[in-house]
Length: 62
Image 1 (tube, rainbow, N blue to C red):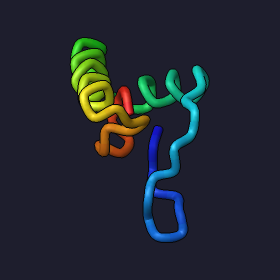
Image 2 (image 1 turned 90 degrees about the vertical axis):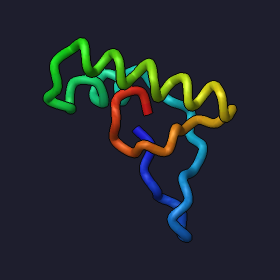
Image 3 (image 1 turned 90 degrees about the horizontal axis):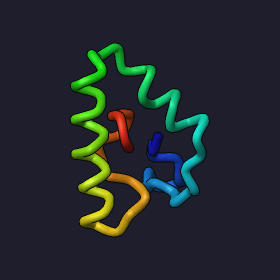
Image 4 (image 1 turned 30 degrees about the vertical axis):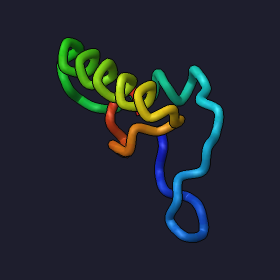
């Protein structure tokens, strides 16, 4: 999950780890088909912008 944690509200680039990724997917309360759709969309945003975070804080795949 990426959340603003820098002193000025910026997101620090941290390496994602599997534990936080699974917690991010499970913690949404959405049906799995919607979780997977959001994760795919957010992953596409990260790939397109070449960043570690898509900007949708707390969404699956961010």
